[in-house]
Amino acid sequence: MWLLVILLVPTSMVLFSVHAFSNKEASQEPMKEIMEKPVATIMQRMEAMVIPASNALWDVSMNAPKSNEEWMALRNEAVVLAEAGNLLLTESLALKRKPWIEAARVLRDAGAAALEAIKVRD
Image 1 (cartoon, rainbow, N blue to C red):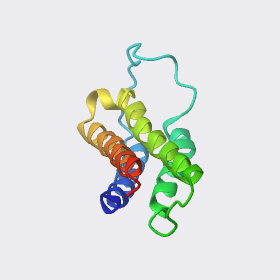
Image 2: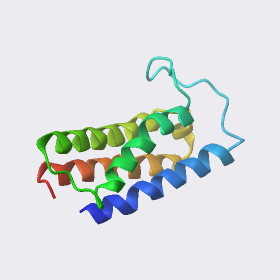
Image 3: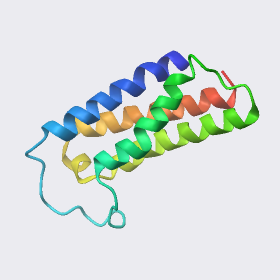
Image 4: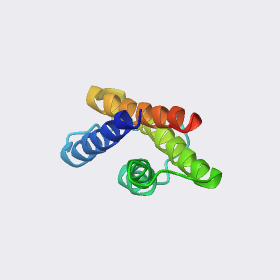
């Protein structure tokens, strides 16, 4: 299970990074009022949520949790990663870009897979 997570997380991060920096022709139309006005940019969300959470999950292969507190901290990182994928699906880029949607779903699914593995402490 962890092998799947370890492979999916970096892949989705690369896809988002490439898309965020290379997509200059993104639509400038205002996003429909799906959510309140975002406070952070996509890059800030990546730096604050996705990268730290994915690093914690990536590092588990070298430093497995031992205590209940460590398992709970890892669980929280998996939740952040999965919900970051959902949050990125609400972006205006997701409204018209299939690769963006696919990458956000991979990120969400990697977080969900990690969460399931953590539940059984695998």
